[in-house]
Length: 330
Image 1: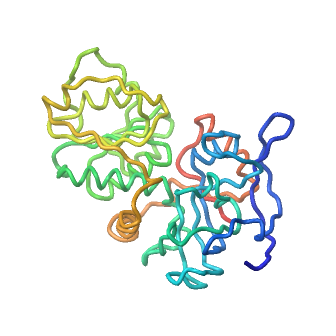
Image 2 (image 1 turned 120 degrees about the vertical axis):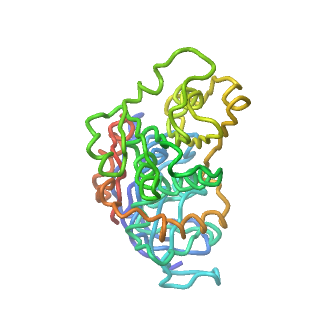
């Protein structure tokens, strides 16, 4: 690997606290993997905030460069599948967890982690989608696979102003579904309507319910990004043969519910983990997101920020103040 100096956001512990700052690094310090990529864009995810603030369940050793998303151009390759100049996407696997991530201008990764940039997407657009959009896309595909019809009722999206939720609202709407967006940020109603939500409700309207095994049906499907008591409430209000796809644990990792929605209404509960999605499935979803599934309003839920602004954005996402997606321009 040729020696190149580059700029990166580095998280490190100082005086008992974790801080983030932009530093100059050298590509010779990157791990010896098959493909060196010059990163053009990344995006900020909740897992990045955990890594940047010393969460040892995400990142074991510091100083470290977070960033579970990266889109850029191959600079060097020992993998015959990739050539210098190829435009590529890398999301999840170990990137930004224990392998230096997309908040640096270079990454070195195994070829098995790389998705060729599909036609129909620019590098910038791919990171406007990023892991959060891929996660939403996996959930949408699971729901559509259960034959949920467009005119059969509304689809609920919880945590609707978050990165996964906002993309889910836009994607379901783009595909012709009536979307109900649940959020604690009712001041963002205008944004959610712009993304395509037919109705915006306060999250309490979902969770403040009678303590009954099942409740009146309100939606035919749901994309839940919250978990905990929200997921329980969503299941109990999903209609016959409905489907719920879940990917979040903001309200906790435990699910206390009952069996009746499953055995009396035939409700399906489907999990999403974009971090370990098989490569064949990643490529299929990315191709859909580059064509028929590409919302025309990506810019409505993205803000572009330079590396230098990320420490403040990390604080915002930790405090639950983040709305939409932060695109990182390197």
